[in-house]
Amino acid sequence: MQFASDYLAALRTALDGVDVEAVGTAVGWMKEARDRGRFIYVCGNGGSASIASQMVVDLVKGASFEREKRFKVIALTDSVATITAYANDVSYECVFAEQLRNFAAAGDVLIAISGSGNSPNVLRAVEYANGVGCRTIALTQSGGGALKDLAALTLGVPATHMGRLEDSFFVLTHILMYAFMEGVADS
Image (cartoon, rainbow, N blue to C red; front, side):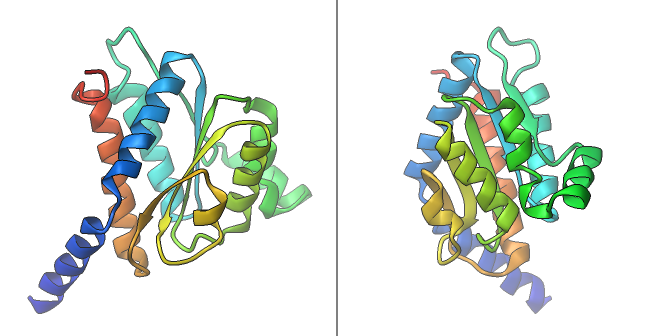
């Protein structure tokens, strides 16, 4: 099927455009947070929220189970009651930043995922995290959006097609997790 061949070729091109040095920096920041007992927070909307939740599973179970050093990680996407309370009573723009106000401190890490790079609630979370001294990592498209310039480190994907962006974000989160699961980050 030509569509499948074309899709996979475009996905390979997108993945080939990822800055592997930036990925290595992200692994280092995550290792430092883990080793210092700091928290990692992850957020995103829609498919990016699902990726955030899966990333937490991989860190809490896959990269921590039966290990001396364990990750402290929270998906700001996972408490539907909290998100809907803020969205209903205040605004959807604040659903992640307000959660960070309860938890985040200097030395923590926020991983913000947004295909467009312009999700207001993700941008507010990064602004807040930057303001309190968190390290901020963006998974977004490399070609546009405010998030790529707002975060301290951007893992940018050279694509605009949402499916290929989300595919690439999953691959990136798996690289980040498996660096720990397979012991590469600790060697």
